[in-house]
Length: 322
Image (cartoon, rainbow, N blue to C red; front, top):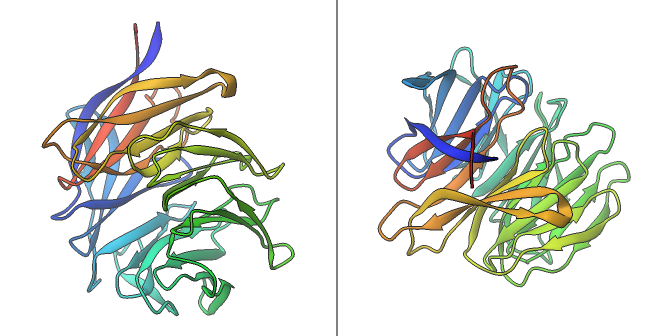
């Protein structure tokens, strides 16, 4: 007997590729998707198999495709980064934009809230990483781009006691920035290709990274060392940890392939499970992932995956036999 992933339904993500999915950190009762159709779509989750989510008001106002986003821990605000080099903060109650953060000179590729919602981090095609005050102002440059490449992913560590930012990008490095001493940085070296995805475990102790070399890698953020590196395979588009468990999910695949979640590979020495996509010619490619925190008692664990066919697919953990 083992846990398996079963498809439970789909959510229409917009009229373009789903580029990012975000969930509310506490409760996991809402998800937002970013899309190449210049909008962010949202759903209030019912967990009813016949209608898994109720569409909410779309967040409109971007003049370029939306490439990144997040939801505040209280579920009140959403964040989006887009191709115009600007970040926008949205009030999810009204659906209106409340603030714009201007400072990047090229596309914003990734954004994230801090665990206390007081700060925002962003990275982009101008090779910079910027730190913002959520209430407005800021724009402190963590990385000036002088000796770097595109920044494709930025994340805060979930734990407030360890103020760090993790970034990765086209320079093949995973960088850990210590905000306590404003400039302390650790470079994790090992990848041989550009990086697209990075994620930090819910307890803030681990980081996973992946991209063009097809090899997912795991890093110990407390000890600053490499723990494990997967064999090279398909390009990794996104990564996420399962809340409450040391499970890691990877969205993988070359541009020629189509992808669907099929199986799981157990990494015994790390006691964690890796769930990856598998190719099916002509099908959609998985581009983004989100695994909400542990649900309420008696509610199923679910994984949300965004695809190039403009859909968000809902996968549920079920008990079965291998």
